[in-house]
Image 1 (cartoon, rainbow, N blue to C red):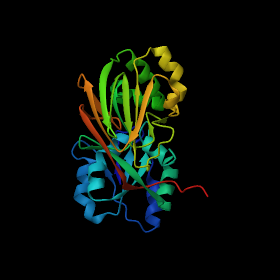
Image 2: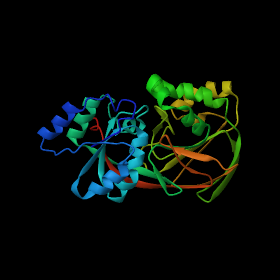
Image 3: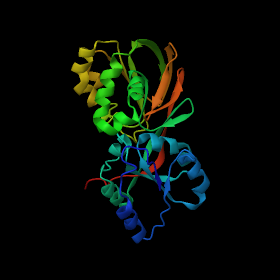
Image 4: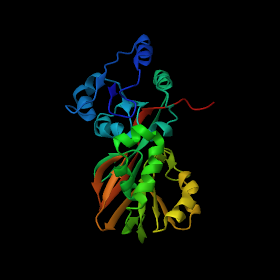
Length: 288
């Protein structure tokens, strides 16, 4: 079990009851608190021969940091949602209540999920270019602790006033697309940014990448589209481009940063691909 004490509620969460539940079921639980001296990837790498399940207590960024080792050793993992957005947990219908999350781990239902790759780096929710990157920069640890999931609304408002237009070229499925944009997102999962949906039809195990790009527009135009953007209804918005594919090559002018799962991971030009059913992750039981 890897706990990030710097995640939004990582330091304050009481895990004793949940750990006791697992130990009473005969599970040996080893607990590590992450700090500057070691990373989640290193801990998994050093212990992978002796473990069957990695439980990660933190936000989406903490989970992202563990992805290389999880995929390399094909380890099943579970989530204690202790971050701000907890979008992967949301995709898996895992309750934000820590005791409920432990019960889901105890029940041990799982599903296989997509794993996105951009320029050799893994991600599981959404990668951003443009406005979404500025939103990530506005999301300081203090802002997230103070505002919780509403910090994303405040960050979007601040970031929009600093956003810049850019040109983008997309190659996919044998087609070339050239457009102007203020925000481009590529999703391997379903949710991002505290519950926004990348595409109405997207699923975390559908084996596809889903892209949308917003053409340059004013703040009030974007605000009017916000409900449709929130629920992934991008195809109903006139000033939006959408695409679904297993691979995409993206070039921008100028060169821009790429952030995914709340972290800076690369820059353009970028090659996006997806590995279908790449990882096993514990999830809520399907409804009967």
